[in-house]
Length: 170
Image 1 (tube, rainbow, N blue to C red):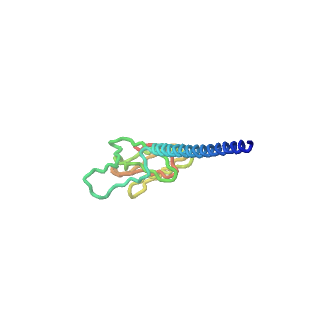
Image 2 (cartoon, rainbow, N blue to C red; image 1 turned 45 degrees about the vertical axis):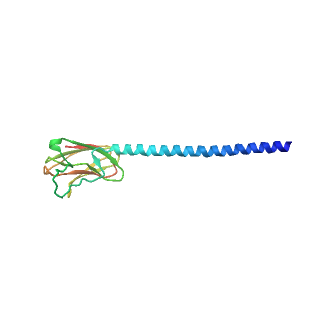
Image 3 (cartoon, rainbow, N blue to C red; image 1 turned 60 degrees about the vertical axis):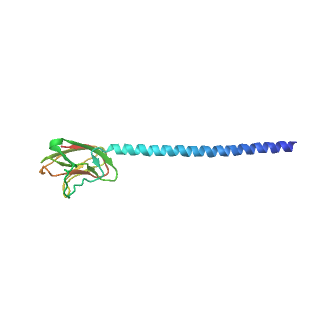
């Protein structure tokens, strides 16, 4: 009789072990699914956060088509008629560029606030030339003038990495 009771108890223990193993597997699968959802959500949030930091600047250099067209180019910002242009952004490894070429003035005022502790270098350029370099010390604001330009010059600003800044041109 003890023999049968022992076998019966062993079969019950074995059944519990199978149930425990299946429960563990199910819990691991649920945890993997939950972790996958958390990772996807985190990536989506990070993408939207990084995308919203840059205002009026992008990773793309402004391009003016030299081909003739019946359309008026829409990538110029005329400071004389449209007013000051605000910008801001951050990048670790890439240049950032203002979204527009600027025109409409002979003299431009550029103000840049550097939010990093390292120096920020800003180049004032057109398609072919660099007209000036603005050096902004860490955690400082520099306001300077760019003078002697043509009213249709089409200049833009290039922000070298690493950068975290905001400012305006007028």
